[in-house]
Amino acid sequence: MQRSDDSVAPIIIKRKTIINSSAHHGGAWKVAYADFVTAMMAFFMLMWLLNATTEKQRKGLADYFSPTLSINRTSGGGSEMFGGDSVVSVESLPHQGTGVTSPQTPDSLGVHGISGLQSSAQNSKADQRALQIVQEKFMGKTGESSIDDSVLKHVITRITDVGLIIDIYDQPGSVLFDELKLPSDTLKRLLNMFVEAAPIVTNDIAIETHVSASPIVLQEHREWKTSFERASAVRLYLEQQGMDAQRIKRMTGHADRSPFAGNPMAKRNNRISLIFLRKKMP
Image 1 (spheres, rainbow, N blue to C red):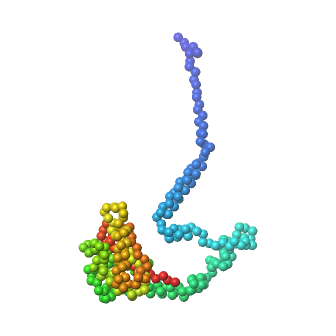
Image 2 (cartoon, rainbow, N blue to C red):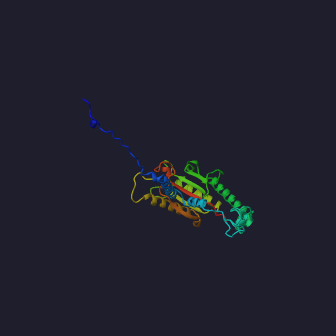
Image 3 (cartoon, rainbow, N blue to C red):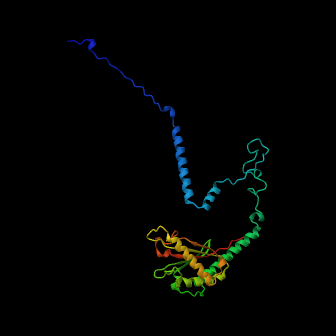
């Protein structure tokens, strides 16, 4: 039987039109997002720097980013922004300054000029040499030390920007303080030697004490009290042996906050630092 034309199913063609609704946004959001991420990175870096640097280091960073080039605010003869001059030209700089090409005068080097700098350098060298003499005498390098090697094993000396630092440590079987928190015989011998060496120089003196950490954390933090009591005991003994009390400028107890050894509980962290402070140069 022949099929009629009405029984043939019609062919339907469906064409989809895709409309990109976000086409008009472009890539501007990527730029904004990148700016946001950069700002957050800068913020967290700033927070880290504030927490990880000292006041002196922060001042150095601030000075680095501060403009140091002075610009003359008087208009020049030209019609452009700088009045015909360059921003770094000699004419653009204030005339009362040294400029980029002006030679330094003696007065610009300090209150006393070149001679003042030379005198300050000589005084610094003399102070350095005097501290070295005290160091050699204390450690017996001059042959005049009255302390034997068994006592000197408690001592390490070094000269730094602060001055001559004499560190005295606990040793196994030989401590610096007895049960009453008074200087032991070993420490007394070292303090006596310190008093003998002190008249060689006129530098001021500082006393710093440290203690080892306790394996049990207590609420009252006895380390602070112990370190301060030891510093007071050292100061009192020095004055009893003839040390001028006016030379002792500061006394500091650091508790267990500055361990010297890798292990905070090591006995070596029980130590005293006797410091001949450097003289302040004019």
